[in-house]
Image (cartoon, rainbow, N blue to C red; front, side, top):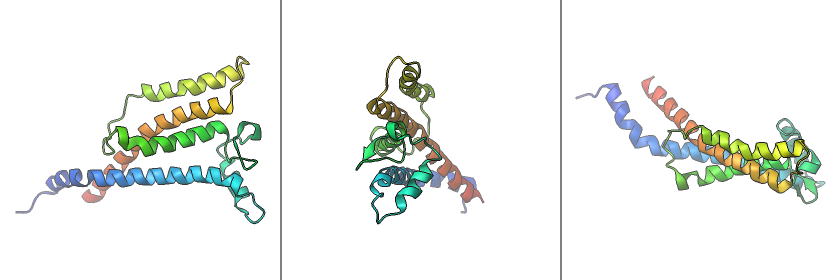
Length: 175
């Protein structure tokens, strides 16, 4: 007997759900790893034989102010982004890589949004206290508060990407 398409869809999705979710998570982690690697490569790519550094700095100039005094330095050269942006991106990478340790990858139920908004509080306080002259923030506070936001973002990005991937798979199966 031939099964109706709806029944096949219901049976097939759970079987492939974990694999699709894991592949999606892996691609997300690989993209963010490449992003962070480029940030670290820029100051190391300033050797006379390399011409890649200027292209990397130029690319990241679209997403960050790149002020040298607000950037961490490697080998005497500033990273491709400021210390706060580096904190966000490295936190995002850490959050993505550690995600399967505290949550099932195929779980697409989002956490309450209040946690994402709460992750903005430390970075907002650090920025505000500096702007109002109450406290001078440091590379350390910028990286740490950025990392808190980056880790929180990973917790929301993974379920969203997995759900998008699952919806695309269901749409393809129906087509």
